[in-house]
Length: 291
Image (tube, rainbow, N blue to C red; front, side):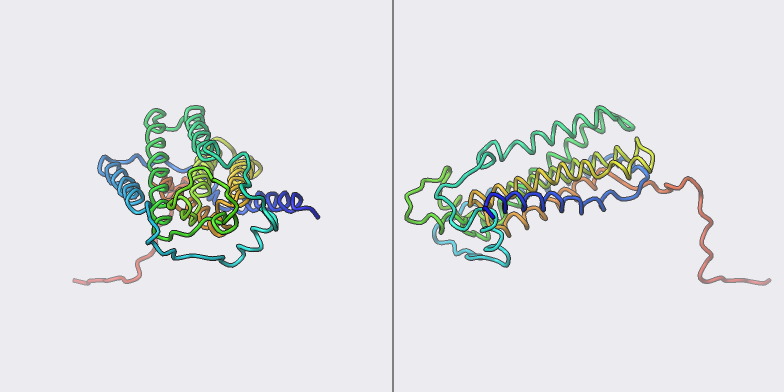
């Protein structure tokens, strides 16, 4: 079987794995918006700014920095041969291995999130849109800061540093810092952040606008499309020898966790989604006084 077939099979497998995220759909009842207070907005903004500043300060490194990870982790060798081939060409690249691949997902995610908020408004449409934009933008910024900080701290060499040594290939943006910014993948992290945030927003709208049966029938669509695309982005980084498989795997997990954190700031579960008042629980200890 050809290497191309292996790559296609892996991409299809990763797209299918995106369906495992369907469990995040949560309860069928719609969530309520949690409008942030001024103090909460300041705290979130400051936290994101601190993360961004930490990344800016920690990321630049020089040759005196010793990598914390300087080799293959479990599954790296097998998965990289499957994706990039047993004998990758020097300078191997693909259509996502450029600035376009870096910005396309956040830009499209911003447009999709804005369209969803305006097309299916809830409570106060303008306030909803601006708060969602704030949380989405702050999350992206904080996610990048965290990613840059870890890259500078770990200083893992990119796969092409070893694979293309002595070939004379000049990689774009090549520098000591860039060449040792492998762990973890910023492309994978930002792409999975966007997919998770937008998927949560779409599922929230679907739970509100659809019946429980309709929601169960259609909730898989956004998960497969969004996580399938993010999986393709992750695979492209391994194929171009920019990252090890473990880099994109951990980056994806990090992006998902950060997205869940920031999305959760703006949502809350209804206090009584069933619509009736439950009977109060009997007291565990009763005191009786007779006079």
